[in-house]
Length: 313
Image 1 (cartoon, one colour):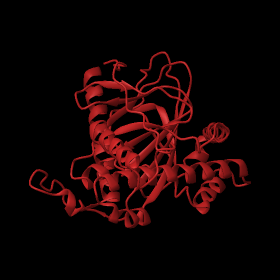
Image 2 (tube, one colour):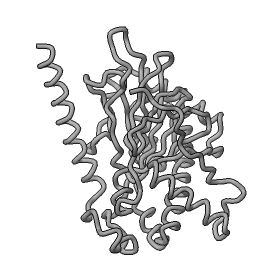
Image 3 (cartoon, helix red, strand yellow):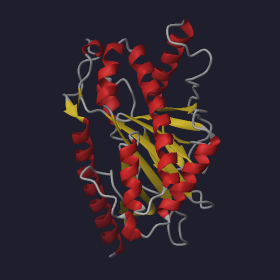
Image 4 (cartoon, helix red, strand yellow):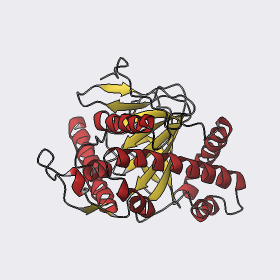
């Protein structure tokens, strides 16, 4: 099904001159963010703090990273699902790597030293700077949503427990016999995800009424997307959007996925539970949700592989 371009995601500027906490315009802007996440599960936002120069540096560094030999890239391992190197034969067009704790210099430096034992200062500095800036956007969005729900008192403890993952993703061009599908539609298991690409289209979002929206890349525009952990925390108010990537067959696509995970037990604030909104989810750990998804993911791959084998028999 082709994406329907008539429907567009909301665009919200979170750092304009009217976004001053404590003002009426701030309250209105917080409501806009909350409603966008409730209706679409995501929205677009300009973020000029990440300069075009830094974007170029980061994406050039990412291309340099994926040009490394496979035997080097597979050294990016982790006991957490999808935190390390990931490439699956049933999704041949994409491969990805993860930097755990990219906002802390030691996290980015450790990854850099693993990939380049002789050092790569440009990669380390640009990626670390990028991650720190995007983490500010992550905090801004969460603060606005917490405030709009009237539960701002929980914000500080949530942020103090938050950990970050930066996934670096490459989507190569399909060969003649391959489809342009880069993976199955899915929701993220993070609390919040911030996506950014090298100005190559491919990301598609599914609306609540079943329509696919093609997201146009636009330089300093970032897409902010709620994960399943955010959905559960909000007692089902926030929507976790189903999304996928389809290549356009013209240029390799590189994407940066900045994922935040709560270190606190995901528990719906009592203020968000009432007769109209009875409690939907029992408390759980964010990392456990990710591990459960990983097991389900394997089952989906296995089922798809078996179905294709039976069809070809």
